[in-house]
Image 1 (spheres, rainbow, N blue to C red):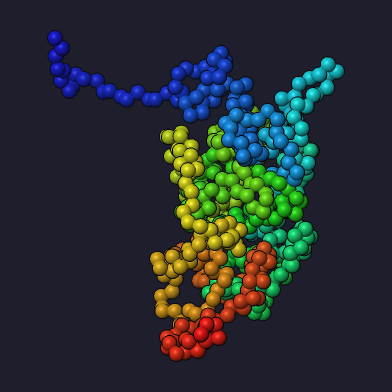
Image 2: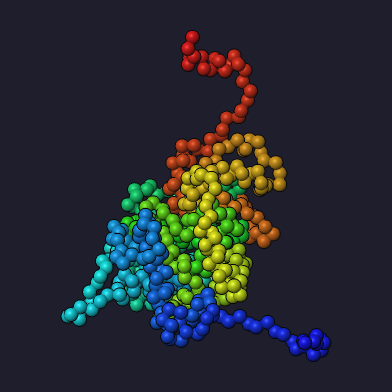
Length: 478
């Protein structure tokens, strides 16, 4: 008969630590080789790791190239597209792996068979006519950040089949660059508009704008009150430069190197900044017949790091001084990234759960058009809703100014409007004065502003029945 022991006799029981793998140390796929990496409790050897990750990449591209066919298996033969391909290269781990995977799949054709003569028999045709690497240099946005174009040239030399193009973020404010690259759309380039920050209205008032695009860029970024808003503006400028360049080169697809981890971070940080209406566009987007996709959205950062190390790839170095220069350490994006990555260390399925949950989320309500700043859908009635729940001024508004019709504010999305008007105890500077705008903003709203001329809406007043009948008397049937 078992007896109850005393507390002193009982040994300290320690909870056994959970194994990082589920079954054994052998590869889950081949069952013979010892594992080299553990991905969400699944063990893979180095030889089986490559096809496993490549399969996720091919599935994402199969959905991109064949959006009307709902299949879980990747197609063995890719369809031919009429346009070119643009690969966004930021120098990070995701974009470096994106270049390598596209090169192995569509240029090197590693799955090709050897024929009798020893030559390579390509079993799939070329999907795109030309493949371009586009890097947007952001050093002008952060004065203390070094120029890394030479490093970009060195990292992309291993892909001679690609065409490298380096854009600069200040090109968004350069009329010369705009006329050169946007000539296909026959847009009239306008740079005589400014924005009044106190009322967020456009005007033709004489503004002593800086002559150099770099100075215009810095003046534009200085108008944002917080570091989070500045980073959001830089990301928007970078994305739209890629899109307009792709349109000028008649490209049909843009691929970005956002991994599963970085995509989850951008989704959560975007929602916290008011971009919940455009959650679907953060994953896949169609802009003027150009499909924008992130084929690494099912590959985590651990898999990316293993691919990078075993393939001998390099990334642009980044140190703590760059974080200080960009003020990234004190932004919502950085705090969200640190929180999710820290949570993923203990719970490996964190980013997968975030991505799959937000994949089921859809926008509520209809869209009233595209935002002139970020070129993404705007929820109808969002400004009237925000006016009811928030207060931007401490004093009652001027009744003479409250009747003004502002078409620019009415077309701003919630995220862009919040970035321009957000205030906190850590605001960089008070909102006020005028500033220049990116070139696509003035081109898109120039005709709208000129037609309305910021006209004052008529003041409503009570009208008698006799006066009403007199105004419509000619339309009445006797």
